[in-house]
Image (cartoon, rainbow, N blue to C red; front, side):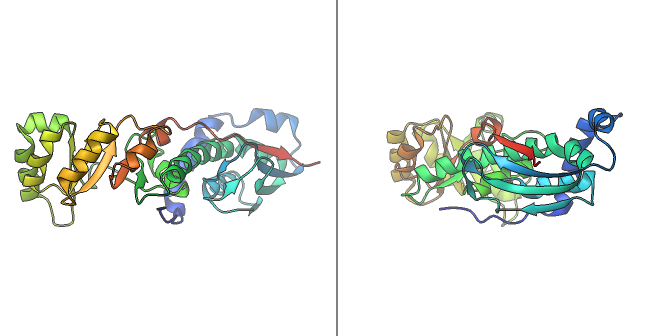
Length: 285
């Protein structure tokens, strides 16, 4: 099961791209290009994938180029979510050579990172394709890049967990300790939230499930359980709540976790530790 990929609104990209460019340009700008490349020099360049993977971040790349120089001519040659092989050109740009060079690193940083997130997500999605499980990200994202990384997860066929603390209640171990018990925490939450807000409870033991359900939890998160224990938990929950598996799930274990019968698998490393996909920008002679 894969998530639909909705376009990224330009209004969301403006601030993120502007900050990234400012970080690179600093106060002096691109002194190398301004000194070594004539102001009227023109260039044609291709953004090329050097390793196989899932593409993500093309709208961000386009926005970065346009922010540096609105006169640049840009052409995307595939869609985000596409599979690419080494040598594939995913974006072409032509116009002032200085402008292309100035935007190059910011463009490649975004494309490489987001495509890396999408690629790792796709690996997990493919591994559980024989089940109905959804692969989800978490809030373990790079500060300032959450919206882009969660978009990249969707490009890889995954789904999104909460975007922020206000999207839903997730009662974790420390909340339970502070509230003096699972049932009490869930009952209190049920009494105070709106009817559209879901309540999820994290459990790491089987005996915590029934109190969470009796309080009215909508989702039970099985934290760091092995697949046999997860299967036992799924049987006990008996469709009374959505079942999410989380904690220490890898490419090697995700298939067994999915086959335990859970509904959702959430994985933090697909956003915070995904290897960058190798993407380069080549000037054409």
